[in-house]
Structure formats: structure tokens, C-alpha cells
Image 1 (spheres, each protein chain N blue to C red):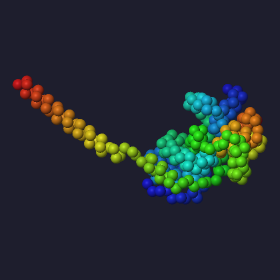
Image 2 (cartoon, each protein chain N blue to C red):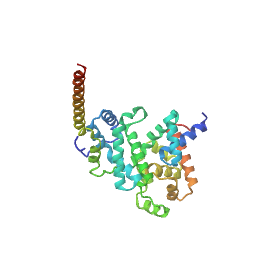
Image 3 (tube, each protein chain N blue to C red):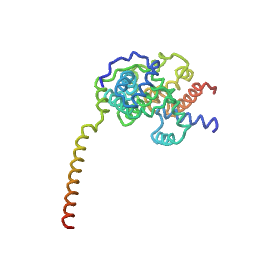
Image 4 (tube, each protein chain N blue to C red):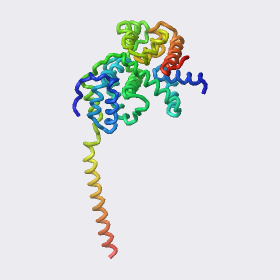
Length: 112
Length: 196
């Protein structure tokens, strides 16, 4: 790769991280980034280096209920439903067991 | 898990080790570690979302989405690629930019309205200059042409597109693209300690 090629890739990657690429170019970059280790490395470098610019922004306290909403969203959602599902499986297993027993009795009755 | 206590007195840069340790615990599903991470970083990440989206309710949504993505993907964080805060900032910016592109940001089409709006807010470039401390990305930025500096800052911190930067700096879009390209290559050479 020539120096110009490297610079072009650095610029493309930098523009991607800045967020100034047009939509088509951005999607194309994201597709290539997943398959190209050099692009991936350049993007990691830009993301790391440019993130320091946010030191210039003042800290602003988020709305008070933001954390509560996040907290609710990360709670495991399957806990309440699990006992119902287990109960349904138990009933199904019981019915299948009963049906099998009835068939066995009928089979024994007719074969005698 | 308790509500986080508002204590952001720990300087984030000095707290890099703590953030790395929290990231490790969160990856294992520790919700208390997640609460502590929120306590330490949410005011910075909210500020990032707000600076890009410019509308508090949409910025609030972006912040929540950011932390849900952090919770979901923190196991993919690779310490070799940089410190945790950089990773968090990238997630917050990408979430905010995506929301802004989907129409979550109210930026007027009329460049004069845009100029008025920006004139009422603190000059982002002046804010940036105030925080210059050492020869890192800030020092390298100082070495660039003023228009290159401003274009990069407006794009990165405020999520401005080429047309929005052109309106803000009263320059043709092609010129802005050229400023950004030349600015980026100058910045990369400086950050890598190379001469152009």
C-alpha cells in the first residue's frame, strides 16, 4: 500500500468517525470495515483519539427518571412467565402420560 | 439495585482503571457495577447526546438507548483498543447521530435560522480552546488551519453535516469537504508523531 493509499484510507475512516459520510458511503464503509483489518484498526484509532474532544463539553445532568427507565429495561423479562410455562409443560406431560397408559390398557385388553 | 448516588467527583481520565474494572463486572451481569458506571459517566454521555440532537427529550431517549447498548455489548469491549470512556463516547455519539439522522434533531433548513441558533449558544470552538491542556488531540488540533479546526469540531462534537458546516462557516460545501479532509490528514500525522 502506498502512502497515498494509506492517507486516503485514513481520511475515509476519519470522515466515517466524524459522521460526515453520506448514507451510501457510510453503509459501504461499515460493510468493508467488518472484513478489512486495516480499516478496522484506523477506525479504532480515530474513535479513541477523537473521543478526547468530548472533554470540551460541559457535563450535564440527565433527567432524573432516565436511570429508572434503564434499570427497568435491563431486568430479565422472562421471570414472571416462567412458572406459567413450566405449569403448562407439567399438564401436557401428565395428559400424555395418561393417554399412553390408556392405550397400553386397551392394547393389553384386545390382545388377550 | 439502588438508584445511583450522584457523585461525579472522580475525574474520568484518572478513573480509567475503575471504569475498566466496572466494565469487567458488568460483562458478568453485575447491575450494581452498571449503576456505578452510570453514576460516573451519564452526565458526559448526556451532554454528548444533547450537543448532537439539541432536543432534551430526544437526547434523553438517546441516552437510555446508549446505556442499554452498553449493557448488551460491554462483553465485546476490548481494552487493547483504548480506554473504556472512548468506547462509551463512541456508542453515545453513534446512537445520537443515528437518532439525529432519523429526524430526532430539530435543525432548520434555512441556514440563516441555523446561524441564529448557533449565535445564541456558546461558541463550541471557544469552549474547546478553553480545555486545551497538552499535546494530544487538542494540541494537534491547534496546529491546523482555523477553518479545518472548526469544521472538525462542528462535525465531531455537534454532529453537523457538510451543508450545516458550510452554512455555519459561510463557505461552499466543496470547500468544507476539503478543509475536513486536509484537517484529518494533518491531525493523523500529528497524532502519529509524523511529519507531512
